Structure formats: structure tokens, C-alpha cells
Image (cartoon, rainbow, N blue to C red):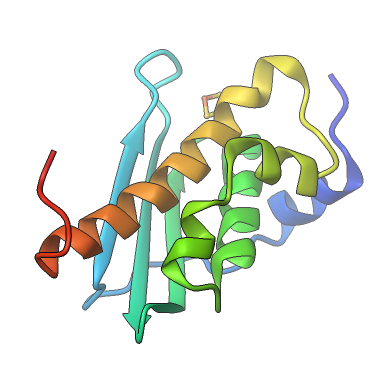
Length: 128
Ligand code: FES
């Protein structure tokens, strides 16, 4: 199984790792099959994601995709960030081996969950 140089770069030197204590939105996702878990925190001002951090308990591909998704979403409006798809994340990383595609799903899902969490807390969306 070969990883692209971009995956290796984000795995070896992941961006935006950590936790935001007073986050405005939190996305939590897990994959029951591999047991990996991902927490993604956002700070929002004027509907722009001003800060974003993640903690991933998972495989190298999950770490690389989390790192990439935070880089893609930082500075974006909520609407723009909601449009970041699972595929975008994998493409930006130069592709992922087929059996690792679910890892990129986790990262995009966590981002979307964090945004929905924020909108629900603001009363702009109803809870699921
Ligand atoms: Fe499950 Fe990567 S093996 S997230």
C-alpha cells in the first residue's frame, strides 16, 4: 500500500493538532469497524472559521486527512466549509489507497458535524 508524499507530509507533521477549550463547535465521529475516533474543534466569528484544531485517535491516514481538512477549512465561511467533501480531502492529499478512503470520510464528517453543532448552539438549526 503506497501513500502519496502529501499524505506522508501531513502524517509526519500534522497541522492544527490540539484542542480548543472554549470551542464554538465540536464535531465527534468514530468508525465502529476500525475503532478510530476524531474530535474537531472550531472557533467562529462572523460566520468564518477563525481557528480549528483536531485530536485523532487513529491510523496515519486519519491523522493526515484530519490535518488536511483543518488546512482546507481555516479562514473559510461556514457555507464554504460545508461544501468541502470527503473526496476533496482525499484529492488534496494526492489520493488515498482504496482501503483507506473511509479515513478521509471521518475528517470531512467531523468538520460538518462541528459546523452543525455550532449552528444548533446558535439556534440557527434544529437538533437532528
Ligand atoms: Fe479507520 Fe483509518 S483505519 S480511520
